[in-house]
Image 1 (tube, rainbow, N blue to C red):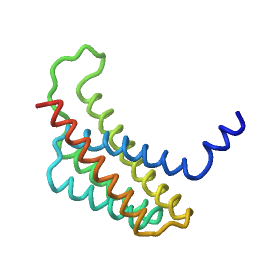
Image 2: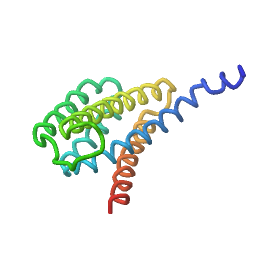
Image 3: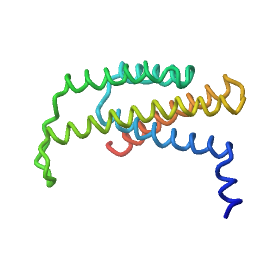
Image 4: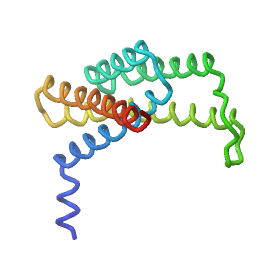
Length: 156
């Protein structure tokens, strides 16, 4: 049992865990952005934020979080809440909308921090800077696109 624990805690498995978490998390984020019918400008800003975090690592988390929070606030002010049919859950449409916005903000914040910490973790492994930056940034872009394609496939 001790050998298995030691094998799972080795740094090479941290990289796989980060890559898997980024793939799943950014796929969910892409699905959620598509379900909110985000415009091309929003997608562009999100991609710029991902590229910025991939280049700067944890140093860019605060600025990226401020930009993302501003985007969520602008979205909440632009779309007060959608008109929905009566659902069989005991919440009003405004409560559902506010919970969805809160979940969206928490997911985005988690993904920003996850990518920043993954870049920091890969940097501690003494790998080539451009290699892990391109790999993690590319994986994030791929996962966003995958989430978008899943949404398009499921809804159409």
